[in-house]
Amino acid sequence: MRLADFISRDMEQILAQWETFARTLLPAARTMDSLALRDHAQQILEAVARDLSTPQTIEQQYEKSLGLAPRPDAAPETAAQTHAVLRARRGFNINQLAAEYRALRASVLRLWMEHCLPDAPHLDDMIRFNEAIDQALAESVAFFTEQVEQSRNLLLGMLGHDMRSPLQTIHMTASYLAAMNAGADVSEAAARLIRSGVRMQTLVDDLCDFNRTKLGLGINVTPCKVDLAEVVSDVVDQLRAVHPDRQISLDLQGDLTGTWDAHRLQQLLGNLMVNALKYGAPDQPVRVVAAAEDSQVRLEVANRGPGIDPLTLARMFEPLERGPAEKDAVGAGAGLGLGLYIASEIAKAHHGTIDARSDQRETVFTVCLPRRS
Image (cartoon, rainbow, N blue to C red):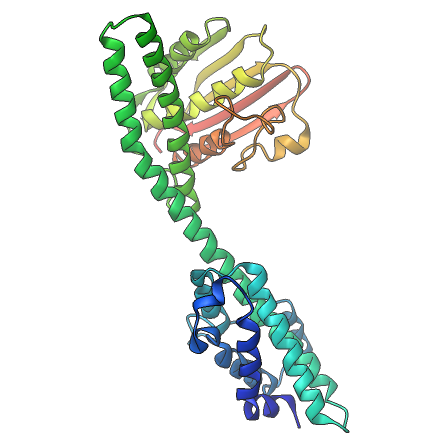
């Protein structure tokens, strides 16, 4: 008997074995009934049987073995894709999802080969079946990963958003305590609360911005007429006050007006300068340049110190990347590794560019922003 006919005829026996195996995938399967355990298994097997009965070229079979078979136009999702989404929502992990297909492959081939005895099974059917299962597995894994990632990003986004209100309350209460003049101890404690609150607010803002980008929403910008000279000067003044022991030079050149989001550009420049202060040589100045160039302006933030190796430089603007000195850091000085990534996303939101170059003498970050973003 050909394998496609065997699958159609012995569907219930195959599904019973699928259900028996799925019931062992704990803890997710503990409270699931027979219908939920068999979720879309029959439709997956029916799709495999149809595939086995459809003539295919060698090229089509090869694409399918890589999980790259074209999806029918009439179907928004395949049965394997829908199965993956529902398994993700039920709490299965990706290893359990893959194990279902591994068990399905083994049970179908074993039952079919036993049925074929004493005759030998059709080798082409076995090859085609494995290709079809590989295609279904690829579809399931891709959709499962996307569903889990989206759920995680939504959770983190909601968590970051909901943390803002209690943080604002902490900051306002600490500011009130600081203004009471209730003694040096209270004032010092209030100042620590304010500093910690500002640090936490920065982390929460970075987390919210990161999740916007991962959800495909991008960095939100509200452009208006801006004098970049004022923006850059404000950021430099703030960081000079925070780091009185460090030198920060500022060079403003030409007409620096344009249409941008001033708050976002403060965030971009602040991230670059904090990075330069953190990794630059303490006894060397951080150099900040804002220069007019016809239809765009150029921002540069440079620091002296050890050069960045090419591998690290190539991944500099990827999310959750942290410098070597930060990888094992914990506590107040440890960051999320999102500063440069968010800086690059802000530049993109303004239709600008950002890049970095480094040698043994100097590391320079350059941002180019069109005057009308």
